[in-house]
Length: 395
Ligand code: GLA
Image (cartoon, rainbow, N blue to C red):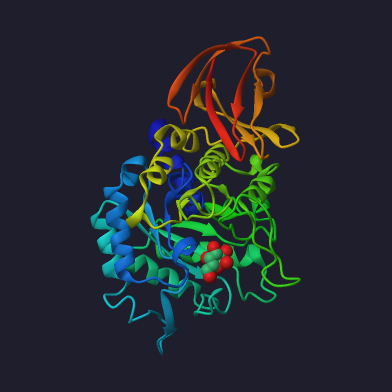
């Protein structure tokens, strides 16, 4: 009798917890991994590109390495019909979005799409303001698994309220859809994003260069080099965790603007930051050395560590930095970053990683894929200019 009553109470309690909280624990328990069309293709998207990208994700080993979501960014949509339903560009997506989602699913992958909280998207296409529930229902009917939701043309809209409205619309549509907030950090989404979305952009757009901010046009802020975004992440680590991640933007690995060592550093830093790993290059035409970076399973394992603790900068000495994060089971991972133009030795001290200062620990190099032996108290390595060494430390 007593047991039956407890069971009823538990069932009632479960029903009174808001649905999105359930969904969030399941969705994006580790940072989402996938591909997005924007960084490489901008508005040059069509259904062939998306199909071929899904094929390439499987063939290249990226699917095996954990990449899952194939996301079309801006420019897939052209208009709304008389009933207000969003219409995919008939010239570039003649088979329609449902058929495309089905194709991506048939490869064992997931499908994502893009919209915007304002009147128009950043590329001037119809956005979701006033159509939130209608669009969310449409996405669910198409089989969408991931929504990136941008912030252009939002006038005086309140960011938190606008994103919460779409969160409610997605919940009402009844399909689990990872919700990616693309608000560029303007209204500090890390302070309110947990409970609304699964990831939130922390800065303006990344560009395919090592460092240096550039104005879009005079007085109009800015695009970021890779390291400018990394700098903006420091201090935000306590806001991230399973189901709710800081998003330092999509990867530029393979797009040609950085050297290979710079791309190693880029990928290492994204992993130490527990960042979503959304590749942004042409997967159909990848050089082996780029494929090797994107599919390095040991680096990806750090990114996807179940503890979900975002790393932080634990030491800075001019151009030489150490970034580190704790891993499940008491291990740590560290990135030894040389921002400068001359090779230098960088030291990581166990004391900086909240370990006893004189402890002995095994060190493994994740790019050389080599055990380096036992080290007492600290580890030092020469680090080439504009590059990084990435290690795990096991006491
Ligand atoms: C904004 C976003 C980008 C991309 C473009 C599309 O700039 O931050 O990631 O989605 O819009 O127009």
